[in-house]
Amino acid sequence: MNEDFAETVLSVVERIPPGRVMTYGAIAEYVGAGGPRQVGAVMSHYGGPVPWHRVVNASGRVVPGHEQEALRRLRNEGTPLRGDRVNLKVALWWPED
DNA sequence: TGCATGACTTTCC
DNA sequence: TGGAAAGCCATGC
Image 1: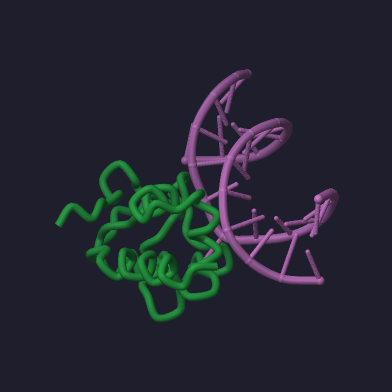
Image 2 (image 1 turned 60 degrees about the vertical axis):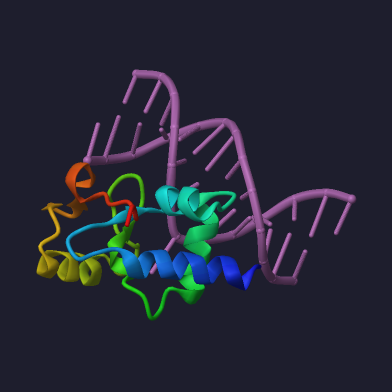
């Protein structure tokens, strides 16, 4: 796997502001990944020191196994949550800066 | 070279 | 939004 790619993904996740989230697909598109799964794979292995809780899938669902943890942080940041899901319609963010 | 696996997505109902 | 099914892509053995 390309380390540079992983680093790019992590940098994008780090740029996600509080109260906003990004989908794996969005990140994959932004970093030019072949598919969203690659982003997830990188996150699982290199997503330790980054706000991974701000990364959700297309359903607005957070990382499996860390849902409570992620939801707690997101809620603390003021992220528009809807029960156990994230309101992508308003929370979805894109690194336009 | 080939098949199985995974922090996913899209389409359909 | 939600569940089921099929598709995509890179990695690992």
